Image 1: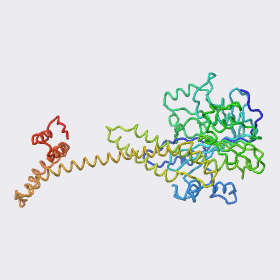
Image 2 (image 1 turned 180 degrees about the horizontal axis):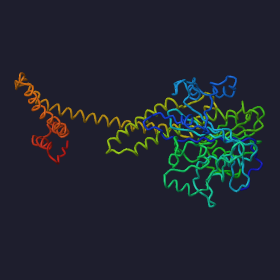
Image 3 (image 1 turned 90 degrees about the vertical axis):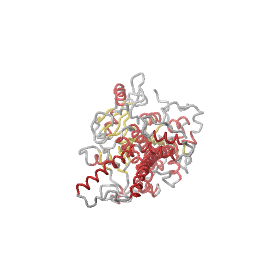
Image 4 (image 1 turned 120 degrees about the horizontal axis):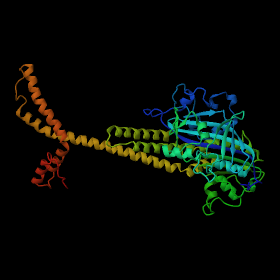
Length: 553
């Protein structure tokens, strides 16, 4: 397809992918899993290295952008993101950030080939990171790429196609739908490290048929190693599962030579991250897009015709995508250390990371509830015990997640505050939080009710045994305590009398427990003044009947 926007050039383009994945517990008997320890200690020679904390390093290396990033957030969010100091012990102390970041530096560039285009584009890779979160079995892969001087059409196409974990379908030419034709990870010397396989239709069909789970494209599998897909046949200490849609959440930054040339159709395609198209058309119906500006655009600093005194920047957020558009000629927008480009890579990255963590963690907890129910066998006592234990552990994790990670506001700065709210609302995290909380509470209420029911049944049985035991106790107490005066008899005689009394009493007690449910019904009938004497005696006969009658109130 020819470029419909040849006059619209992007001077600088950046794209950050956020891919949340659910981690499979390593030890079933432990609530808190430390998956990052296997990257830190268990994989010598592996590509991942923990990222050094700027806040505990050399103060001379602490830059102004680090300071600006830090002061953007409220104090409790600062403690979550940066902690209050490193702990000396291996566990996560109260003052240390619960986030552990690992980075691989062997991938220098990515080469993308697009459909019906013989000329691939090469993007530089700024970083590839894994974000682990203490006490939450979630990891988020963050991949940042950038390039200079490309057309708006190609920028739109890259935003739309690059972050695809697997193809949703195949076109008539056998290529993966909505995916690049080819993606290659390149080393610093240009060596091809991994290549995509979106066109291997049989691989994906066979995997889904066999495992009832989606397969991951080969170049993404390579990037995540030594972590392996849970349903694959590969072995690895850290296993992950897909938790969301195959389309990865994305952040986009576009510095254009002249943003005023962009039409409403261009902005809709950028804001909603759709396939590129003609600028004078809309990707969806005009009625469907009536609320596009009010729902997805933050235009506090946006003017269609910017003035020299005030830079013009448009922010768009639809939940799964966050896109910034501005003028490449404005230093405030393009400065890598103090401008909006720096904020995009740091403040706004974290601003989007938090709600995507919220959504992934809530989906993970909901998935745990489903797994616990699917493994429940109500006829197996051990299965019931495992189910109760899993539900209670899930509730404990949810409570800790609420107090450690759940925020309704992260900043008092008007722009960051509004953009975070926009991202959270479009992702639906508040609604999802309420749903998961109600599901966990319903499960917990059921367990509490079941426990109370069991305790009530135990009390009923003990009451019946006590009631019938009271007859013998009162009778022997009335007749006297020394019915058989054998206090001075030999030990063998006293032992014989003890066994003669103990065995029938023990048998009678156990028999009473066995019949306690029916005896309880008899006692209830006996106390019911509405029943006749014949009905009451009938209830007594039901104690030993193989087919007891059901008494109606």
